[in-house]
Length: 330
Image (tube, rainbow, N blue to C red; front, side, top):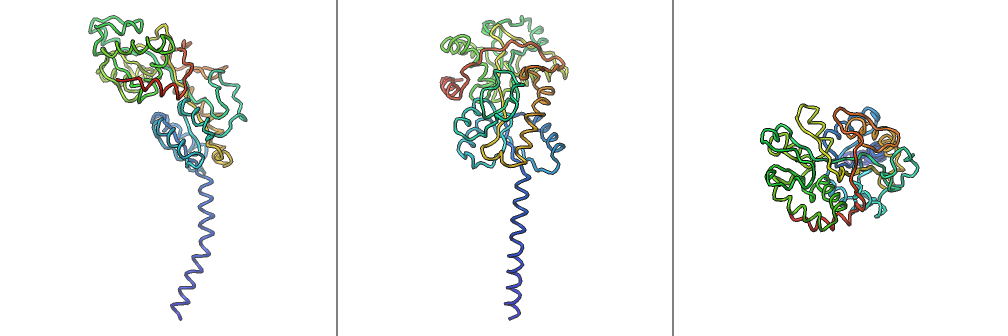
């Protein structure tokens, strides 16, 4: 009987603990925010520090995945995904998720402070404009007795054979923005003919947008089709690089942030997203990507080009991207 009484006592204790455990679990969930992003490590570190300082009582988990994985994962999981906030994902993927009705409405935010060309949806808000350029190692060119290229046509010259590095459009948004900008400028057939010729001079196609500038820094290439922001970081660290813009203008990608539909009802999610839109986007603009996204404000960063003339990046949809990448064979 004593054993039975002891067993009943244990069962009663467990039953009393269950509601408390559930309540604690619920409280923890309410204070936890899960953020998916495809941005660079240094930006993730900065963001983590910023939200930790701003929201010391919240657990904010930032999970990195490449752009395609985030898009496919959330498209498959829908509003049932564990993700609360998508931070800094390419517009093409965000537009696709908006079409799938997975993203919350953001029209309650004051988006009039942003430039007209970045306000294209009711379901996401701009994070950064990431421009590209032709980056050259001036010292290496001089040592090789080679002139500085002044046009895309110049890059086809035989003297640059094996000296050019480009991100693969199939794995890199930076690579794709160069492809898309020249398709818009030259026409599709002429653009693919151009890249057919350029391929003869390519030293390597990198899997990421940072690859070409890293190749220049490591003296593996002399010319790179890369990101302005990364080139500026290397220049400010002492690299002898030049940032060139050809008459077609600078290609660029837009990245934005969104909440998953239904998650905006959670106070912690709403507060973190408010912080991103109302405060942290400006911080990012000032510290990392000082390119034009605000109507009345453009920060100045040492050695960062100003008054950039951008390429025509119209019709930059996921359907168009998939169609063009199906033709890319390098």
